[in-house]
Image (cartoon, rainbow, N blue to C red; front, side, top):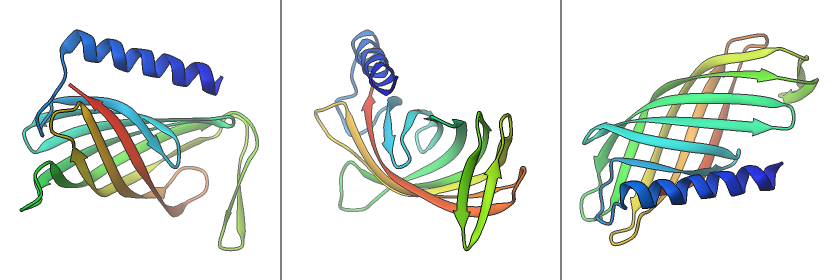
Length: 164
């Protein structure tokens, strides 16, 4: 399933790039790709030149989680193509089997059909290669889980997106 999901996502990104053209400068309007740890499919759309909405979809063998973030972007002086970003967001997820999370000596269980919901934040840096439709990002994504078992956590990751 992971291989077919990856192949489908890659084909969709390539078709989208061919259909809408590629962003070859250091700026772009939208991008699709993957984020690693935890693995997610990601789409980012700029609503203003320095503000974007990013959607992340995480699919595991034990469930799904979707996150939407509103990000503020800014240039880093002296580093063309490199930008910082930060912003708030929220998530919602569902679990399809017993799932265990170890946190500070406590174990949290999500049973079949349980949901997760909470607030997220993000802070990171992104580099858009000039002359290529490729963006690389690195970020930290703290979250607060409110549904079922309340706790706070931190994710982070490396992203690879194709821009257009």
